[in-house]
Length: 278
Image 1 (cartoon, rainbow, N blue to C red):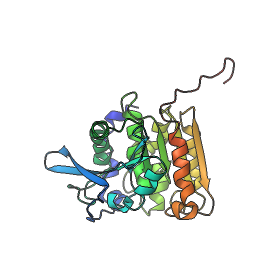
Image 2 (cartoon, rainbow, N blue to C red):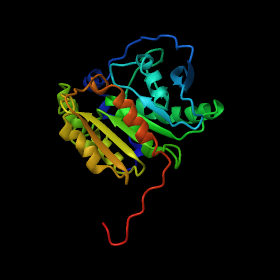
Image 3 (tube, helix red, strand yellow):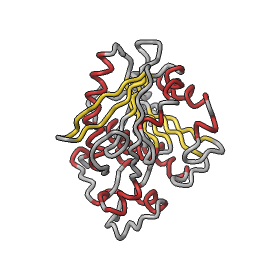
Image 4 (cartoon, rainbow, N blue to C red):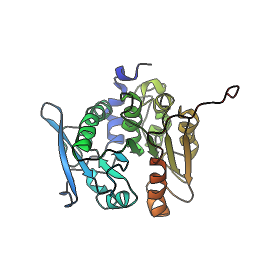
């Protein structure tokens, strides 16, 4: 499977797009401690990145974050200081049609745009004196560009992967959203996101957290991401009592502490397997 050549044509069916994407043109100016950067991803279409670089240590880890389908980058303005206080810088990406972004969302553009945003993020972090390692994080729908970017980025560009409430197999996920997958022509995972197949190719530290009572992506399906992950250092955290959208409400500061602890692993070399151990 050549990931870079995947076209996601069947995922552009109108029924699938209407279920996956719920764009809001909700833009709010950044706080004094944050700033936006516009990136042109194709002629006439620009996407904003919102930077929250408040971590005290210049070598603090950096997270490039992809949000869920009903959210916008500005929704994370209130949470960003908590990322910073825990010792992480946060960069929130936007999708076409969301917030102040131009264009209309699609699966193919969401994935391709993420690949175009990464060089800009790395360059801007360097210009801002932020020398820490870079990880990518995706929540819900954001797991799709996050996993793809982790796998397709050049060596050393993405040092870790965090998935919250992420998508495993495409067809069960779409069925939970009420999509008639047969009408849309989806017959196997090869027609969909291929998250499980992609994550198997990523060997760097990986952290997956999922709600116990997620009614959109049951925790049992999410565990397949962990089972198939190619990382030598990987963790799966089930959040007791939580649903798809309220993990932070349930655990509070423990959420940010857990992410910070994981980010401490970014850049660590893979552990070598002992001889004779499989």
